[in-house]
Each structure stands twice: as structure tokens, then as C-alpha cells.
Length: 329
Image (cartoon, rainbow, N blue to C red; front, side, top):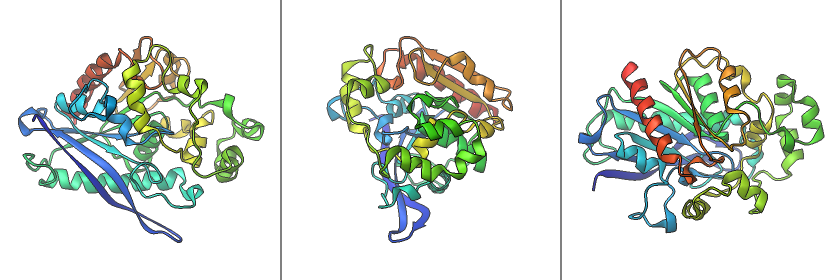
């Protein structure tokens, strides 16, 4: 046994009418003490739309002792990192309020920040996982995929939670081809769109927890012809409802461009060659405040990077970058 793992539910700090205090579900996976990096670091992972935290621990056939090559969490733990994977409120094992339209991006970000604070306190103080001593100098690095990357970015903007951000499959391009006409007309006016976010999200989805139904089109969004069939099968366990407001916001052109322009920590941007985020080389330009922006393009890879052969290169590059970020704090 080379690593330890635990599932937790923690207080989100959020209460909504009719449902009381809400809890957030998360996983913590860590190597044994001897495998930790010289400067211990935790990668805090947020899934994208229509996914839950299992996206970061894809295991074919659900076999915990099987092929770990698709599991970001296990691969990064094997490289000496603690990995925390969080379910947004309304998704996966986290509490799901009946009124999903109440889950604004700001509220989801606050819940994730509150969960992060509690986990970091327990890791830095010791006792959360067997064989891990107190880690008072633990460095936190945010990792988000797609919509989760957008929420990671917003969390950094509002709370300065992380020493660096790894944003996977994300850009501020949005997905304008999926917007209703009214939203397209307003897309260039960030303030106007945000003021009407709930109404436009309701008009777009109709329900608070929309689903992406399996279809050739949806399958191509997440995977594509070059994806490993074992990974495609494994990702089914990670499929989930979407959160209407954050999902709609992520679809908007320029979604979080104002906040992105103020992120000043090191950035690692990973895009598949066949991703849905737009031309990869154009994406770094929005991050004008960061002096350290790394771009990694995965060859012949679609949006769900972990399903493709290039994932090993991604794991290695991200691990090397994260060690540099941790060592530079």
C-alpha cells in the first residue's frame, strides 16, 4: 500500500431556505510521508459541467485495484502530491437543494472555499490521514476542468486560495454556438448578462439540474474517436447533472475574462488538440497579470483529457510544474 484515501463530508457554510446547512462531499488521497515532495503540495480538483468528483479518479470497471492509468488522483499521488477532489453543491455526493437555480457561481465558489479551508486546516494540523504528519507548510494549487476551471479561477479571484492554478480544457471563449438568441445578443455585455444570469439560465435549460443525454454529439464533446474505450467506460461513473447557472456562465463568450485578467499566480493551461475551448495558442492572452503562463497541448486529444493516450505526458508536465510552484512559494 503506497497511499491512503478518505471520503469526507464537510460544512459548506451555506444555508438555503427549506434545506438548512448544506454539506460538501470530497475525497482526499495522499502518498505516504516518505513520498511527499520536498515542499508538500495539495492539488485541489474541481470537475466540469455534467461531471462529479469521480472524473479525477477514473477506474475501468470500478475496480479500485485495477488500471490506474486514467486516474488523475492516483497518478498525482504516485508523484508525491496530496489530491483533494470536491463535488460542487448539487452534484455527486454533496447536498442537492431542490432549487438548483439558487446555486449561483458565487455561492458555489464560497461553498468550495469553505470546504477547502477545513481540509487544509486538518492537513496542516495533522491527523486527517494515517501516516501523514502535520504539514504546516503545505502549498495549495487549484486544478479545475472546464466549468470547474472557471470556478477555480473565480475562487482565486475572490479568495486568493492558491499558489498556482492548473486550468484544463478551459478558455474564456465560452460555447456561443449553444446559446439562445437573447443570450447571444447580450454576450458582449458582461454586466448585463450577469445581472440576468438566473433568468437566462432558466430560459436556456428550463430545469435547475439539466442533464447531457448520451448521444453521438455529447459523446464527442467529452471524448471522441481517439479516446481509449476503457476510459470511456470508466467516465460513465462520473457523469452527473449540470448546475444551471454556472454551466450557463461557462458557455458565455468572455465568461470570466475580467477576473482572468487579474489572476497573478503561475498558470498551467492544458488543452486537447481537439478540445472545445478554441484555438489553444490564443487562450493565454487573456491572463495579462500572470508572469508565468505555461501552455500544454495534448496531441490527438479531446475535451476529457484523461481518456486519451497523451494523459501520461499531461501528468508528468503538470507534476513538474506543480513542484516548481510549490518550491517557489
